[in-house]
Amino acid sequence: MFDKQQTLEVSAHEIAVIEAALHTQSKILNVQAGAGDAQAISQLNEVKQVLARLAQQKPVAQKPAGRMGFPWCGLSRISG
Image (cartoon, rainbow, N blue to C red; front, top):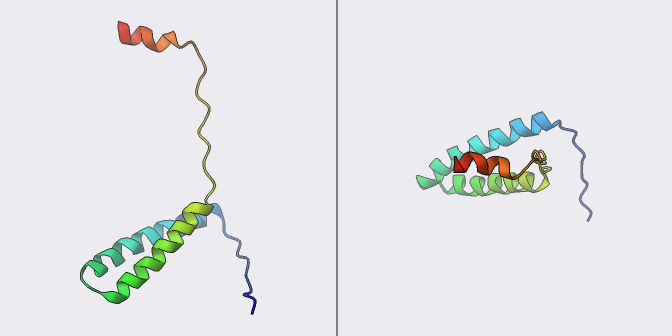
């Protein structure tokens, strides 16, 4: 009736390794699917779903704040 969920502790580095491996696997499956392998197509769809879920749950890296300075400094270089 109820699905039991398990918790898995994985470091950010390990997630990056897993994600890179899944990207490689999707490239391999894409070639196999292009050759007409029906099983590769279904596996490729599963890998793409997992990659999409990873992308949704990955924390967004904050961009470093730009240097606040005088706006005319850049214009002086452009105008000569």
